[in-house]
Length: 308
Image (cartoon, rainbow, N blue to C red):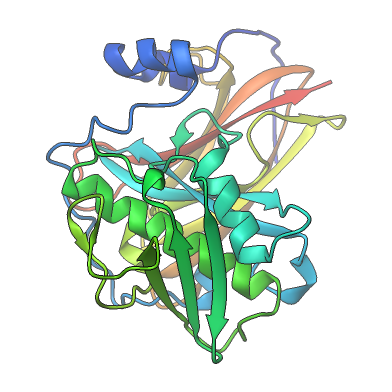
């Protein structure tokens, strides 16, 4: 545990670190640009394309009213999937409800965005014990997505659908389901103009961010001066660090406290971390960084927290 004494309030540092064009867009829409994706490399393939269930948190039946909804975030010169716990709406099955959130709502963390548009029709169903079928209207698909971002959009849908099905008990934890996508009932068309739908989709662990903070969530307000945080590390990364700075500090400056993260391996190429830091009243930026082979910049996830 680390103790520090400081109190400063500024705008979140992540907004200041965005490229100018993206920052201007965020100022108008609070959503990063989906179309700035040309030339994104595919994430490095991990040992398996089907993630161990321990890599994906909160997918048990006791969280039936809350599922992990997946979003896209840019970091380390690439774009990866991140997730936030969201409550499912009333009146829909859990998968449909979660996908409506993913397509029609905004993430809590302004660093994330969705590659989808709000559809006028969306339905999901289960076939047998291992196939989730999603049928969505064509207006859910942006015409401006290039193939690299389209791949991430498809994985965003697949991870969200599987998360909702697992959390609600529709799919057993031992089963890795297929996801079939239809556009207006058809599979003989291409999603986003580049993704064939003739075969089912599976979760691909390589598209998940190599480092994700699971607790706390962005904009968390805490009454205690102790900030406990935890998260997931993928790909066997061991060079992982955390830092805390006053919210709004330029990236890498005004760091109040930092340390290495102890990663506990829970499965092949899957690890978890947990730590805590004591803070006085104020608003802070908590950042966890991982040095990922093949990337010039570290991959990061950060959260703004307020101590009252």
